[in-house]
Image (cartoon, rainbow, N blue to C red; front, side):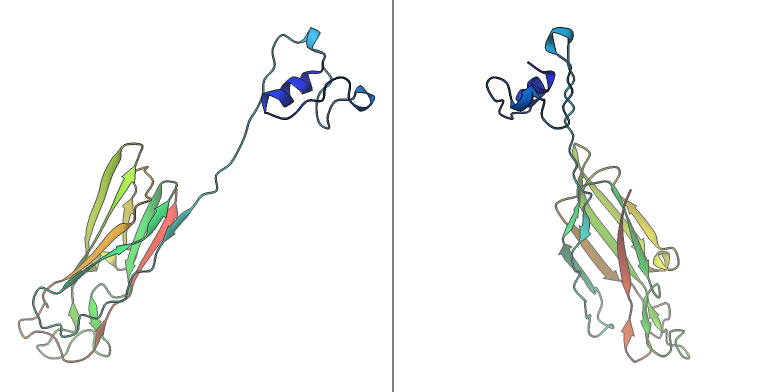
Length: 187
């Protein structure tokens, strides 16, 4: 019997009884006879592709920004089968007046906010990752949240809480907006 037949049996492939065509081993198999072999190694390999994805985050319209206690919270799909870093950047670092971001007279043109993210990870034990940023921290290079060498498969919660204008007169009348970009980068 050829060692290649032992390898075929070890991985569950059928072996023909008796000699095969011209008593030759299957394609790619060695020709060492068993009477010379003391042991064999069977190498089994496989691969799982990296996957790291985030779901859609809904746009939010707070309406009248003069109302106190404005905020939102949303569950978002998050599925990463490898450790990752989450980068969060903001265009303006606050809800900003569309035409006069610096305000006018005694009225402010920007409303600060805080943004929080929270998601469970497994490393292999389960734990919770939670991070909160002030809007000004998200300008430029932004903020980074690490999965702490864990994977995340159960989604995340993102929350935004409006702050107070930096002017006692309040906010300048008009439309305000901000764009927040969240990027997932596998490590």
